[in-house]
Length: 260
Image (cartoon, rainbow, N blue to C red; front, side, top):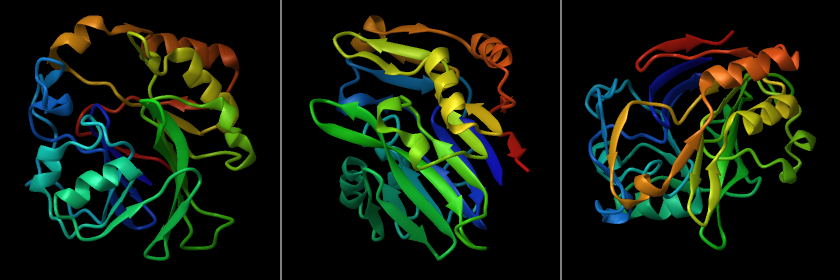
């Protein structure tokens, strides 16, 4: 398995012989709900990839319909014939953009791509009153379902109440946040170090890679009201003190990890 960091929530994963583009934000700006006064973000440094410099992508995987995961300007510049697997809200967006092969999955539904890659939707972030977005479990089943590399991706919150360990006993790599974001009225919408450690103790990944990290310039009302806490260094200390054998890796933008 190879994992390439783009920035923030955006990754390229090579698994089961497939190249998967995850939650791509490759063009500035990023605007929530088309309202710059609410939230507008720019990369401090140009992204490691643009729509024109990406490698050949076999599948696009989108966890949420929110703009920082389902970035319309970026998706509008990509090849609309690329298959997409997405949460129901994100699937609506990519269909509106003209993508021809869109599969929506949610709440433990499975999708098998080209008979090699099994993707399971894990209940993720709760957006608004009822919308449940996705985390994902990816597994190489090309040599059979009982073996093969596995990965877990969740860009917001690890939800212990869904009793994930009964369905996913362990993973090779977990990609999740370690720096919390607390929104007014909504509370903690992105997990911090303690929840990240709970994830590790539940799924026992061999490797943990932090996500939702990057250098961005943000303006608008929402950033002014958002509070953050935690750091990669704090999580590293918690992980070391826990006795878990999980390795923490921090790739730089554009860096590729070979996870053996």
